[in-house]
Amino acid sequence: GFWFQNIFWKLEFHGPIPSRWKFVDDLNLLEVRHPISAPSNMQKDLTDLESWSNDSHMKLHPAKCKVLHILFSKMPYVAPPLSINGIELQQVKRMKILGVFLQANLRWNSHVDSVCCKSSQHLFLLRKLKHFHIAPEDLVTVYVSYIRPVLEYAAPVWHSGLTTELSNKIERVQRRAVRIIMGAKYTSYTEGCSYLGLPTLQSRRLHLTKNFANSLRQSDQFQHFLPPARGVISGRQTRSSYKLDTPRSRTDRYRNSALPFIIRLLNM
Image (tube, rainbow, N blue to C red; front, top):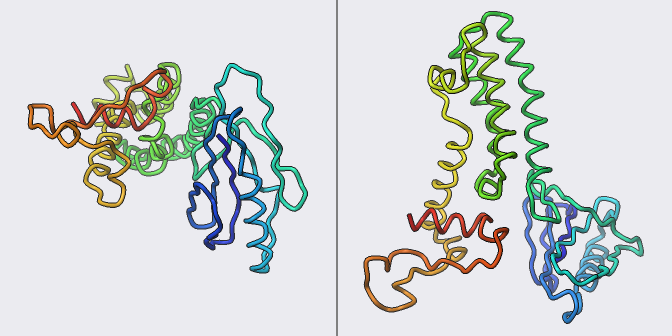
């Protein structure tokens, strides 16, 4: 598949694009195809986008546009180059889309590294406030309002794909925060979290994902992302007819991705 991201002047493009996502001034184009048997139409879509932009008296900036190829085929494959205004677009192994780093191998190392680095820098604020003898409950308020949201941003998207190592890496940030807040009273992470009323980040992510799953199922606009219930498919009423049809997973990569995990949560 091909991902293309571009700063897009907060306007809609109505050309023949197979798949696109747009939020404010970010536009992402997606093409899913067989790398060998199906030809790519992405260059045509980019050319149409370029023509529309010129007709609208705007200019695209190829230097701000990136291409991400996601391919797991065992056969050797050379991706065709893509260009705008005759300038070839840079091919990357990771891309930041609406604050979330997406890697070509569909792992979450880059995103976890990013949020851990950013939140660790914010721990400096806790140290400064601790130096001025701010009460622990106020330090907790600063942590849950200013630091923890960085670690949980878009968690339903990537929580299910975390390895134990990545999950522990995120948890270590909160461990450091608890140690700073508790100071000399710190004995262990578990006791510190209990004393401060902080759940573990892993349990928090699971809770956030469950809430997102329930809101998705109740949404009239996005409910179509989920498969139909088993009773709708079979036409029979059984004890499990309310459960969603579970997609078959040939790989652990797909089984541990967001949507199959959300379906399993809703079927519990």
